Length: 329
Image (cartoon, rainbow, N blue to C red; front, side):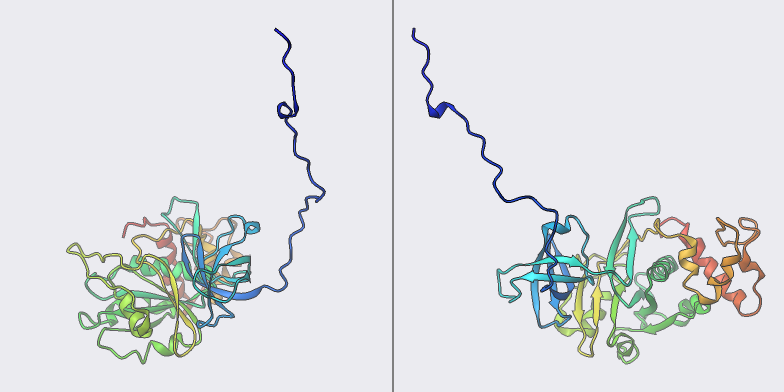
């Protein structure tokens, strides 16, 4: 048997590296247009160019951003097809610095925080006065998240036809919290001016009337609404956060109804720094002070305050107590 004869088909040629050198330099995208993220859905981001609700485009995240999280409210730079025509896709090439953030964790033991909304000016905490019954736990935790994230909190009470708002609102009087009402049959004269020309996040349990309020503020939104179950909990109707433009200027961001609001990422100082009169005092506290007073923190500087500040300290400490409680309220 003669030896096998080889030809060119038996030789595997390794492709060359080419003449184009690899580089870590990325384009600066100087021509990118600024936009506000208004929707997020399965790897696609709806964006309003220049913050104009009438100039909408759909975008994907550019490869160079990796897994950089992008949420509703983020200010981003976009390149590519900016026509907004159906089946077109632009690219998000950068995310701007966030002025404020609304963050939460799954529960108080989960160290992984999630940014819910970015760059909002204020947080509208929507609470029903009945059906489902109001819970102070959510309000306290939402206040903590607002103070820590740089948002101005507003308490909005719904279903005023079922109960009087004063008893529940009185529990937060010492926090100088803005309180408004928005019952189904109430005019929105008190609420609408608070939202004009600002970016406002709505937060609340399912079934409290949050989507109903959004539909009244933005009739063309047509957000789904749902009834309360027999056990006093609302059914989830909103599944994604979405920013909706107000006719008077500004945006409202509707968020899904929540069952828990973890605050594992927040420290006591994050809360107290939001109170200008208390922030100065805690500079004299010893390192590691939890600001709860004796016996837990016997050298807390807040205990030296007198006059009206005493009531503010008591109110702030109620928030700090809520910071350490279970999320099952």
